[in-house]
View 1 (cartoon, helix red, strand yellow):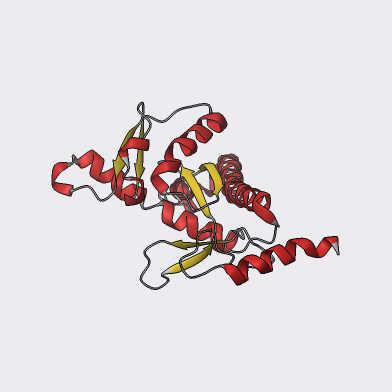
View 2 (cartoon, rainbow, N blue to C red):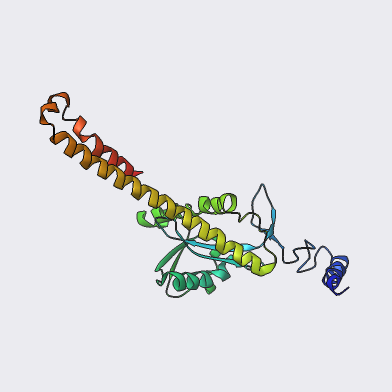
Length: 230
């Protein structure tokens, strides 16, 4: 009977709540689920919890992630996100580029310059415009976290499970980038080794030089350059 007491309390809250009630129950087995309105035309309401995400400006490494319960306003979470990033990386950013949801200046950190992405393009410099366009690169990162790293559906229980799932999803994203980097480096080293083996083999048989044109000898280095660019 004691095991049913939590469900009885949740059932009582469901029966007594109304349309305008606060902290409503949307799921019996996951009472921490919240109704979130993100202003999307195709999906007005979403159910779950918010996740704050911080990525680097150039390589899109995730350097900060945390699950946010009780549906806080985005602008109120900026300080905590920056402080978490500083603990993880050991560096504090001088500038951050955020979307319109972080427009509350009262909760912005004083030592960090915050740029809003919807600022009038006529009043900003070319450099700021470039970084504002770069800010949108976080959107595909969010999509990869949801679709490829199981952030779209959390199978762990409770608020602690939400926090663990967010951290594991971000770690999986970073590990996948790291693995791709290792494969790229190994590919470069293989081509580099192949180039020197090809060069030593060619120069050990000088009588065969008449069968090779000069532009053919540059083929291994061209492949190496293309691999680096990719």
